[in-house]
Image (tube, rainbow, N blue to C red; front, top):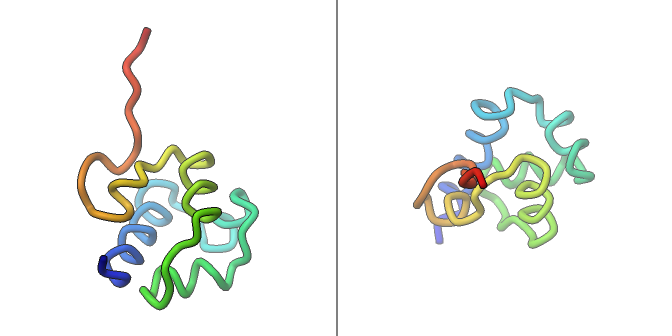
Length: 79
């Protein structure tokens, strides 16, 4: 598990998928802004709460966040 790569993927979701500032991105998730900064820099591992909040709020594929495999966001079949 590479913290720097995980941080880069979190940064990608925030900037390329949502287009939000750190403040707005985490505010919607109920997370402290200082946490997102350390995560994006690869200085800490995301907590379960952070990952769950990001998944619920932005429909992010957590497998992609942690491993880089799969789609960035979840895609559900209609029906």
